Image 1: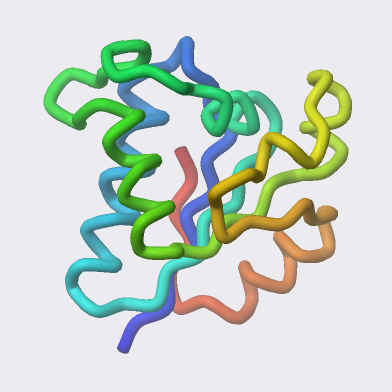
Image 2 (image 1 turned 120 degrees about the vertical axis):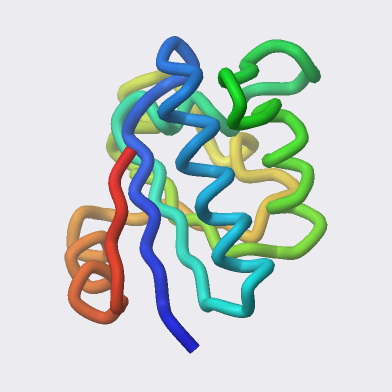
Length: 120
C-alpha cells in the first residue's frame, strides 16, 4: 500500500488547485492508499467552507463535497497551527474532522515517511 502526503497551501481563491488537491487525496484513499493531508498557509481557509457551491473547481469538484467525504471517512488532516492562528482561527476550525494542529516539524516528518508527496 502506498503512503501519500498531500500538502495543500492554496486557499479558496485558487479553486482548481484546492479542489484538485482534495480530489487527488480522496482518489488515493479510494484506491486503498494511506493518505495524510497537510493544510498550510491559505490552505487553512479550506476547512472554513460551509456551503456547497462556495468553491467549485473546473472538473475537480465541489470543495464542500470533498470536505464531507474527509469527515465521513475520517481521513487524517494536519493543519498548520501557525497559519491558522495568523488567519484568526482557533480549535473550532477542526470540528468534525480527524484533524490536529501541527507545526512545520510534522510536515517534515510526514514528507520523509511517505512514499509520495504532492503539493497544491
